[in-house]
Structure formats: structure tokens, C-alpha cells
Length: 330
Image 1 (cartoon, rainbow, N blue to C red):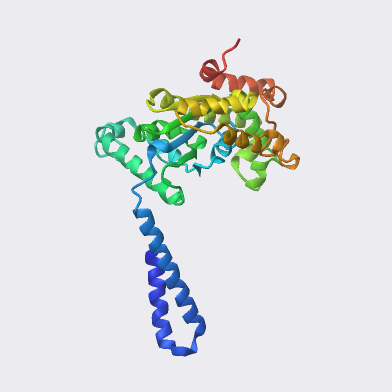
Image 2 (cartoon, rainbow, N blue to C red; image 1 turned 90 degrees about the horizontal axis):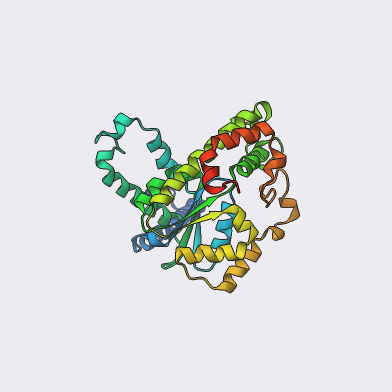
């Protein structure tokens, strides 16, 4: 960016000198570009004066989409000493590539993510994430926490947590049947996901022509992401907390207190209460919630009405181990 501004400013400088006083427009544009360049240099210097964002003050939210991650990060980001990094997808960037690598490649020191050179590329992931966080959140003050909503990058959670072992981690889970029902509703014609992509995506076409195939696909996405996040959670030795959407919905205030206590973060009860109240389901405008909307139900167990018996069978078979782990039959 700086080099581009500099080149444009130099080019305009030559044009201004050749045009003399005849071109006031060029002169003003040249001055504007010079000002932009100077401000960019000042911002770069300010960023460079900070080595990085403290990884111990990063709070990662992993799990799956449509699990209440937007709601949770909204409440946590409401507090004065916290910023939000909204779905950087860094987990997907590294996790997808690594998970698809051939075994022969993984055994090779020539492969960029080969096991023999793991120490080097894990350090590179760490630097990549910390630099990205710093430049994406330049106004985050020293000592503040950074809440990172990354459910759709959960496939890379094991790598991220290995690279940032001092970070805090939240594993947020929701009944996979409710998750799949929510995505199915969103991707159906008239739903917010369908409309946001103008109804042209493969997923949206599947909901119309082959809804059961779409359900199977989404159940597999859920399984893959939550299994990866669970492996990361199980291995992580830093502060971590397991949160079920159903518990968060049933008793939000006490569950939020528990989250902060387990993560070892001090928070004023009154501040927490204000954040919970502001982002409560009751305070979502009626026009923004309901079938087809981003805020759909705000309850648990809706899958019993939304999915066919065959679709329920598909989800339960695909996610059986996770249902047993997080939602065992009474």
C-alpha cells in the first residue's frame, strides 16, 4: 500500500511540475496523496512499535456454525476491555491444506507442512496469526482481550492451539440436529443464506432438488469441525472451557459467569449483566427473527419439527460419536 501511494505521488509530482500552475486539480490530488502517504507511514510506525498482540489474551471460539457463536462473541465483545476478530478463517486456511495432505508428503522434510519440520511451520503459523491479529485490530489497546470467532475454521483448531498454547479456548457445541435444521432453513429459497448468495450456490440448489443430500453434507461438515475442535480442546493445556448452546440459552447469566471464571478472566458482574441484557433474544427486533432469518428460533429441539425422520436418521448416524459425547441419552 505504501509503495503504491509513493509511486502515485511521485508520478503526479512529475505531472504537476510539467503542467505548472495550469492544473489546480492535479496539485490538490498530489497534496492529498502525500497526506495519505504520511498518515500511512505514521500508522505503520505505530504498529511496529508494538511487537504483537499478547497471545495469552486471545480467546478463540471454535465449534460449528449456527451454534450461537455470533451471540456469544457479541456478549463478550461488549465489555470494555475486549475487541473482536470476526471469522479470520485462519483455521480453515491451514487446517484444510494440512488435512488433505498425502501421508507421503507429511513424512517428507521437503513438504512445507511435513512432520520432520513441524517445529518450523508451527512457529510460522504463530507469527502469521499474531501479525494478522495486530493489523486487523490496530486499535486494540495493550492489556485488552481479543475474542476470535472462528467456528467455520475449526478444522484447523488443533494447529492453531498448538501454535498458540497460551491462548484461551472456548469449545461451543450445539445439538447437530438443530444445527443442520438451522442451515437447511437458511439455505432454502427465501432464507437469509439463500438470499445473500442470490440463490445461485450449489448448496441452495441442493436444498430444493436433493434436501436429504444437503442434510448429509451439512452433518459431515458439523462432524469434521467439531471433532477437530474437540481434539484441540482435549490437547490444549491452557485455559479452556466447554460450552453447550443449550446451557447458555437456558441460564445465560450464570453460564457467562462460569465461562469467565474457568478462563481466569476477571469481569464486573454489572458489566456482564448489561452485555447479556443487550444481546438477549427478547431484545432482537421481531422483524429480524423467525423462519428464514439469521435469528431463527432461539430455542432448542426445533429439529423435531424441521427435519423429516429420514433426515434425523442421517444426522444422528453421521454425528453419533459427538451426540454420545455431548448429548447422551438420559
